[in-house]
Image (cartoon, rainbow, N blue to C red; front, side, top):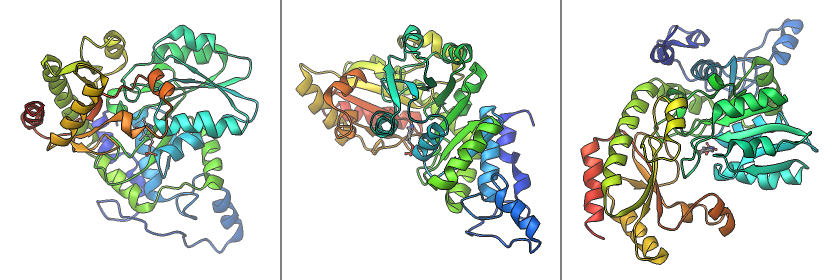
Length: 394
Ligand SMILES: *Cc1c(COP(=O)(O)O)cnc(C)c1O
């Protein structure tokens, strides 16, 4: 099975042992076991057994994991209840007290909290670097560095990390590398192809794609995924049978959705760039993006994520105008999250107000006039018309 579109429909179907064409929901916590006790012991100790007890595995979870591993070009994968469950369990399978992690200034807010507060309390050291500066990653390496953790494009500024550089840096120093590929999706970018060891996702976003589930996935070598699975057995964030089934169903149209989203976002970005109401626009698909050449090198599409800054006489006015636009837009829904079929918009400075200190906001580049957009699959003319009518009310 060579092509992604075909894999999305057929990969992992052997886990459906029924005659149903559509994979059933295995809504069960436990499974009838063999009365031969040596067979029972084997099932109880087997890695990711799909039919023993739900925390160990579930047929749909196995099917989805096999499909996503195929998409990310890794040996194996494990699905978990949320993106944060995937990220935290994946990192805890690598570091212990006394170890050091190199991470970026800009990460998803939950990941930043996990690194900065949770892991510090458990004796893990973190150095945060500017992701656009390759030398900064190299300079941060210590004898106890066990992990380089990156996210590209990053949230919300759409800065890019050079995956080839980080992948080879990790190999050179024997340090594990991990990338959060949520914003790109495997249709647009596959970090493993640039030497990154582990890929994590919030499957809540593009992979699920319909804003109706939460899920996460960790992709990597068979041996590493087994270690993550052992951690997940005790941490316990298993993906529920129903959410797993929704994820599988959503994935079938991933390639179609992401292609349409890429196309819509580029057209919207080009239109917004011309607008006199915009002070700055960040979109990886625009030649004005400072890392456009790198984006073209490592991404096959530029995603639906874009970030704009609204014009104004001063910061206070920019904030007010951003607020007005947010309230006047009719199609763009003011909601957290991203990657669904519907277009969403958020005001990052408000969303992360409670998580980030003002200095953190500054290093992650968040301003008060900023709006982050997740473009959906509506008709592009309607999306542009919506911004047009909102701008007309400023
Ligand atoms: C949403 C998100 C997460 C967290 O995922 P949840 O499913 O909400 O736990 C992690 N990383 C990125 C980039 C995200 O956008």
